[in-house]
Length: 317
View 1 (tube, rainbow, N blue to C red):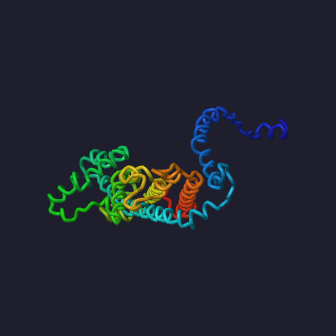
View 2 (cartoon, one colour):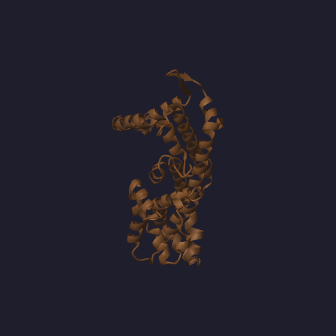
View 3 (tube, rainbow, N blue to C red):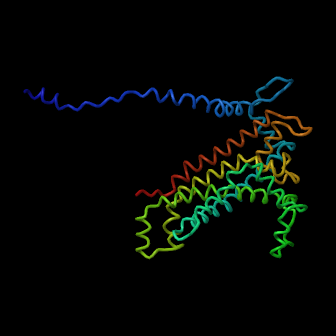
């Protein structure tokens, strides 16, 4: 046999895999639904923010709607007030909800803790409740007339601390934010708890051999390993808070009282776009507010994905 024939026989030919066109067939219905209810409304909202209605005719005005929203006395006060309240709403969740979630997850991961399943279920249960139910229940609890909060504080000798927190401009936003924290603290708890359970036993055993146990082990070993999960929780909190509307609307109504102290971008968008009481809806300005909300969320998510996530140390086992 010649050398040429031998080389041809030994030549490695790449394996050609058949093209799996059927995958596109199964993905197509989901793509159509997602496009119809997400992508197209988003594009239409962005387009509508660049138009205004003059003599019942849409007129292209460019960025003029944004100039009016940011600088006009009629619009700017409500917008900047809602944006400031939204930032406070987000900070309360980041500084209260997420640390409590991490602490609860650390407690539930203790090997000697009994009734873990009961505690985990009880803490996560409010997350499954409707925001309407949660808002109505807490309005009853905190009511100064027929609520149980004054009596409970009286039992422990702290009734003097009770105040109509939902009715005072200085405390209403904090009260609503803490209600939201109570409802959703189970989500960061479960995510961190799952991340803690996924830490390999070899790492824990090695730490114990080095004399690192208890809370020292959590701060030095476990917490750095769950930083990626904490980052995901942070960005989910950011997106959820800047899309918030339902709980504030249920507890404080569309006007987000008292005196707009609980008004956030979601409630402002609702009133502007759909109108409320004697105020007619303005689709162009409503779309402008929605576009600003989208840009804020996009900026936050991009900051996390391209800056924060790259700085988070990754551990591979």
